[in-house]
Amino acid sequence: MTKPDWRDVMTWTIGFAAVASLSAQDPSRPRAGSPEAVLERLRDRVGVSPIECGRHPRPVNGTPPDSYADALTASVQCVVDAAALRRQSWMIVQRRGWDSWVATGLVSGADGVVQQFNYDSDPTGGGGAAPRMQMTQCGAPTVSRRDGDVRLDCSAPTP
Image 1: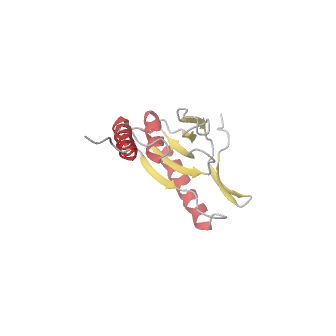
Image 2 (image 1 turned 90 degrees about the vertical axis):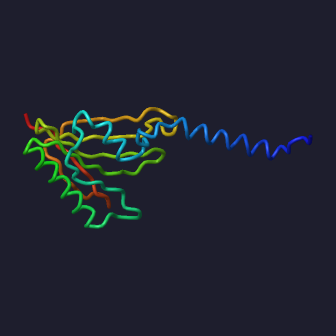
Image 3 (image 1 turned 45 degrees about the vertical axis):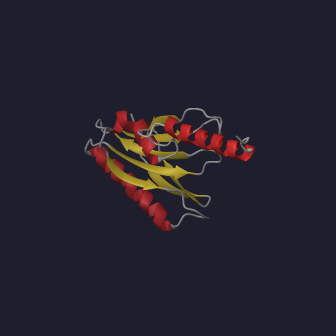
């Protein structure tokens, strides 16, 4: 019997490790850096079938076009309208992240309240921390253009 070549042994070892890592992932759970992961975290607020008011990935290069701001404005209005009808809804805006997937957006609940969320898939910047979701009430959501960017803004709710 011949002694196995070290390259063959390494190839098999890497192959087994890859298969083991794939089988260790839970296929029913969405990837942490995705709109689906955000929606899963928002389920208690928006229910199982919220009105989807828009998913907005970051524009690839430079200043976002007017159409991007218009689409965000339409999504904000959709959430505000749903809140007025006491319907659950959501919208999401992907933001620039240096080392993790980040997003912000709006949700409305059956109580008619609009909230803004901020999501970070790894707040430690690649350290493997659990995703973080922060929620704040949003009295009057708007879309603004500042410094060559388009932003989703919220004013404090009025008492």
